[in-house]
Amino acid sequence: MGRLSLVIVCGLVASCDDPGKPLSGTRSEQIAASTSATSTASVATEAHSSAMRAGALCDPPTEGRSLSKSAAAFVDATGGVSDRAMPTWDGKRGRWVSFFASWCGPCKEELPRIQRFAKKLEGDGVPVDVEYLSIDDDLRQLTAFLAAQPEGGMKSSYWLKDGPPRTAWLASLKMKSDPPLPQHAIFDGKGKLRCFVSGAIEESDYPQLVSSLR
Image 1: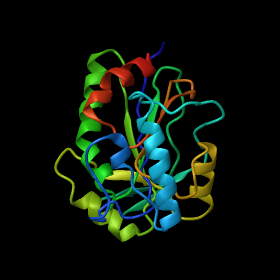
Image 2: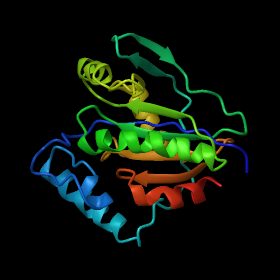
Image 3: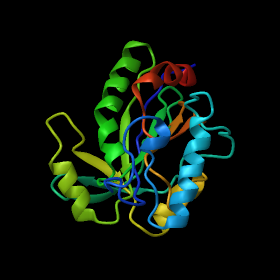
Image 4: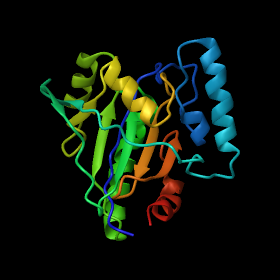
Protein backbone atom coordinates (compact mmCIF):
# COMPACT_ATOMS: atom_id res chain seq x y z
CA MET A 1 0.00 0.00 0.00
CA GLY A 2 1.17 3.55 -0.68
CA ARG A 3 2.31 6.14 1.77
CA LEU A 4 -0.31 7.96 3.75
CA SER A 5 -1.11 11.46 5.02
CA LEU A 6 -3.31 12.57 7.87
CA VAL A 7 -6.14 15.11 7.96
CA ILE A 8 -7.81 16.02 11.21
CA VAL A 9 -11.22 17.60 11.50
CA CYS A 10 -12.91 18.79 14.75
CA GLY A 11 -16.51 19.72 15.37
CA LEU A 12 -18.99 21.60 17.56
CA VAL A 13 -21.97 20.05 19.29
CA ALA A 14 -22.15 20.75 23.03
CA SER A 15 -19.76 21.80 25.72
CA CYS A 16 -17.26 19.06 26.54
CA ASP A 17 -16.26 21.16 29.52
CA ASP A 18 -19.59 20.56 31.24
CA PRO A 19 -18.59 19.24 34.69
CA GLY A 20 -21.53 16.85 34.55
CA LYS A 21 -19.93 14.92 31.70
CA PRO A 22 -17.14 12.35 32.29
CA LEU A 23 -13.97 13.29 30.40
CA SER A 24 -11.60 10.46 31.21
CA GLY A 25 -11.44 6.68 31.04
CA THR A 26 -12.74 4.70 28.10
CA ARG A 27 -13.35 6.15 24.64
CA SER A 28 -17.08 6.13 25.37
CA GLU A 29 -16.52 8.41 28.36
CA GLN A 30 -14.64 10.89 26.22
CA ILE A 31 -17.37 11.55 23.67
CA ALA A 32 -19.09 14.91 24.07
CA ALA A 33 -22.88 14.86 24.41
CA SER A 34 -25.23 17.19 22.57
CA THR A 35 -27.18 19.98 24.25
CA SER A 36 -30.57 18.30 24.60
CA ALA A 37 -31.36 15.58 27.12
CA THR A 38 -32.63 13.35 24.33
CA SER A 39 -29.42 13.75 22.32
CA THR A 40 -27.36 13.15 25.46
CA ALA A 41 -29.09 9.83 26.09
CA SER A 42 -28.64 8.85 22.44
CA VAL A 43 -24.92 9.66 22.47
CA ALA A 44 -24.43 7.74 25.70
CA THR A 45 -26.10 4.68 24.18
CA GLU A 46 -24.02 4.87 21.02
CA ALA A 47 -20.82 5.39 23.01
CA HIS A 48 -21.59 2.37 25.16
CA SER A 49 -22.16 0.25 22.06
CA SER A 50 -18.84 1.43 20.65
CA ALA A 51 -17.04 0.55 23.86
CA MET A 52 -18.52 -2.95 23.76
CA ARG A 53 -16.84 -3.74 20.42
CA ALA A 54 -13.95 -5.42 22.21
CA GLY A 55 -11.84 -2.29 21.99
CA ALA A 56 -12.12 -2.00 18.22
CA LEU A 57 -10.78 1.33 16.96
CA CYS A 58 -12.73 1.60 13.71
CA ASP A 59 -16.50 1.89 13.50
CA PRO A 60 -17.87 -0.44 10.79
CA PRO A 61 -18.84 -0.03 8.06
CA THR A 62 -16.73 2.44 6.10
CA GLU A 63 -18.54 1.96 2.78
CA GLY A 64 -20.35 4.94 1.32
CA ARG A 65 -18.37 7.52 3.28
CA SER A 66 -16.17 9.94 1.40
CA LEU A 67 -14.33 13.19 1.93
CA SER A 68 -16.26 16.24 0.74
CA LYS A 69 -14.85 18.16 -2.20
CA SER A 70 -16.29 21.39 -0.83
CA ALA A 71 -13.75 24.02 0.14
CA ALA A 72 -13.52 24.95 3.80
CA ALA A 73 -12.43 28.21 5.37
CA PHE A 74 -8.85 28.25 6.63
CA VAL A 75 -8.24 30.10 9.91
CA ASP A 76 -4.97 31.06 11.57
CA ALA A 77 -4.11 32.37 15.02
CA THR A 78 -4.24 35.99 13.84
CA GLY A 79 -7.87 35.60 12.82
CA GLY A 80 -7.14 35.50 9.11
CA VAL A 81 -9.76 33.61 7.12
CA SER A 82 -9.50 32.34 3.55
CA ASP A 83 -11.13 29.62 1.47
CA ARG A 84 -8.91 26.63 0.91
CA ALA A 85 -9.56 23.19 -0.54
CA MET A 86 -8.03 20.07 0.97
CA PRO A 87 -4.89 18.80 -0.83
CA THR A 88 -5.62 16.56 -3.80
CA TRP A 89 -5.07 12.81 -3.56
CA ASP A 90 -1.69 11.73 -4.91
CA GLY A 91 -2.12 7.97 -4.59
CA LYS A 92 0.58 7.81 -1.94
CA ARG A 93 -0.34 9.99 0.98
CA GLY A 94 -3.59 9.39 2.82
CA ARG A 95 -5.48 11.65 5.22
CA TRP A 96 -6.70 11.49 8.76
CA VAL A 97 -9.60 13.92 9.09
CA SER A 98 -10.33 14.73 12.74
CA PHE A 99 -13.38 16.81 13.73
CA PHE A 100 -12.85 19.03 16.80
CA ALA A 101 -14.06 22.17 18.58
CA SER A 102 -12.14 24.67 20.68
CA TRP A 103 -14.40 24.09 23.70
CA CYS A 104 -14.17 20.29 23.56
CA GLY A 105 -12.13 18.86 26.44
CA PRO A 106 -11.41 15.43 24.88
CA CYS A 107 -10.47 17.14 21.59
CA LYS A 108 -7.90 19.33 23.32
CA GLU A 109 -6.56 16.44 25.39
CA GLU A 110 -5.84 14.27 22.36
CA LEU A 111 -4.04 16.91 20.24
CA PRO A 112 -0.50 16.21 21.53
CA ARG A 113 -1.14 12.48 21.19
CA ILE A 114 -2.20 12.89 17.57
CA GLN A 115 0.99 14.82 16.82
CA ARG A 116 3.10 12.11 18.47
CA PHE A 117 1.26 9.38 16.58
CA ALA A 118 1.90 11.18 13.30
CA LYS A 119 5.66 11.14 14.00
CA LYS A 120 5.54 7.47 14.99
CA LEU A 121 3.66 6.58 11.82
CA GLU A 122 6.35 8.34 9.82
CA GLY A 123 8.98 6.20 11.51
CA ASP A 124 6.94 3.05 10.93
CA GLY A 125 6.79 3.67 7.20
CA VAL A 126 3.27 5.12 7.15
CA PRO A 127 3.91 8.87 6.83
CA VAL A 128 0.98 11.14 7.59
CA ASP A 129 0.07 14.80 7.18
CA VAL A 130 -2.09 16.22 9.93
CA GLU A 131 -4.95 18.58 9.11
CA TYR A 132 -7.48 19.93 11.61
CA LEU A 133 -11.06 20.88 10.79
CA SER A 134 -13.18 22.77 13.30
CA ILE A 135 -16.92 23.23 13.35
CA ASP A 136 -16.91 25.88 16.05
CA ASP A 137 -19.86 28.25 15.70
CA ASP A 138 -17.92 31.16 17.18
CA LEU A 139 -14.94 32.15 15.03
CA ARG A 140 -13.59 34.37 17.80
CA GLN A 141 -13.45 31.43 20.16
CA LEU A 142 -11.60 29.32 17.60
CA THR A 143 -9.11 32.10 16.88
CA ALA A 144 -8.40 32.59 20.59
CA PHE A 145 -7.85 28.85 20.95
CA LEU A 146 -5.35 28.78 18.08
CA ALA A 147 -3.50 31.79 19.46
CA ALA A 148 -3.18 30.10 22.86
CA GLN A 149 -1.54 26.93 21.48
CA PRO A 150 2.12 26.32 22.42
CA GLU A 151 5.02 26.64 20.01
CA GLY A 152 4.80 23.71 17.60
CA GLY A 153 1.13 23.21 18.39
CA MET A 154 -1.93 23.78 16.22
CA LYS A 155 -1.76 27.38 15.02
CA SER A 156 -4.23 27.02 12.15
CA SER A 157 -7.10 24.80 11.07
CA TYR A 158 -9.83 24.38 8.54
CA TRP A 159 -13.18 25.71 9.72
CA LEU A 160 -16.68 24.61 8.74
CA LYS A 161 -18.96 27.54 9.32
CA ASP A 162 -22.52 26.63 10.19
CA GLY A 163 -24.51 26.32 6.96
CA PRO A 164 -24.21 24.54 3.57
CA PRO A 165 -20.42 23.86 3.72
CA ARG A 166 -20.72 22.12 7.10
CA THR A 167 -23.80 20.22 5.97
CA ALA A 168 -21.98 18.96 2.85
CA TRP A 169 -18.95 17.79 4.83
CA LEU A 170 -20.95 15.93 7.46
CA ALA A 171 -23.29 14.39 4.87
CA SER A 172 -20.40 13.09 2.76
CA LEU A 173 -19.10 11.16 5.77
CA LYS A 174 -22.59 10.11 6.87
CA MET A 175 -22.16 11.97 10.14
CA LYS A 176 -24.97 13.46 12.20
CA SER A 177 -25.73 17.15 11.87
CA ASP A 178 -24.67 17.55 15.50
CA PRO A 179 -22.00 14.83 15.84
CA PRO A 180 -20.53 13.83 19.19
CA LEU A 181 -16.91 14.90 19.44
CA PRO A 182 -14.21 14.18 18.62
CA GLN A 183 -14.51 12.02 15.50
CA HIS A 184 -11.86 10.93 13.00
CA ALA A 185 -11.96 9.75 9.38
CA ILE A 186 -8.78 8.10 8.07
CA PHE A 187 -8.29 7.72 4.30
CA ASP A 188 -5.65 6.07 2.15
CA GLY A 189 -3.83 7.83 -0.67
CA LYS A 190 -6.61 7.08 -3.15
CA GLY A 191 -9.31 8.62 -1.02
CA LYS A 192 -10.76 5.39 0.34
CA LEU A 193 -11.90 5.55 3.96
CA ARG A 194 -9.95 2.98 5.94
CA CYS A 195 -11.12 3.78 9.45
CA PHE A 196 -13.74 5.96 11.14
CA VAL A 197 -13.28 6.59 14.85
CA SER A 198 -15.97 7.86 17.21
CA GLY A 199 -14.32 9.35 20.29
CA ALA A 200 -10.88 10.47 21.36
CA ILE A 201 -7.69 8.77 20.18
CA GLU A 202 -6.13 6.88 23.09
CA GLU A 203 -2.60 5.62 23.76
CA SER A 204 -3.69 2.00 23.31
CA ASP A 205 -5.05 2.74 19.81
CA TYR A 206 -1.71 2.98 18.04
CA PRO A 207 -1.34 -0.70 16.97
CA GLN A 208 -4.86 -0.72 15.47
CA LEU A 209 -4.18 2.62 13.82
CA VAL A 210 -1.09 1.29 12.06
CA SER A 211 -2.93 -1.88 11.04
CA SER A 212 -5.82 0.09 9.51
CA LEU A 213 -3.47 2.22 7.44
CA ARG A 214 -1.30 -0.57 6.02
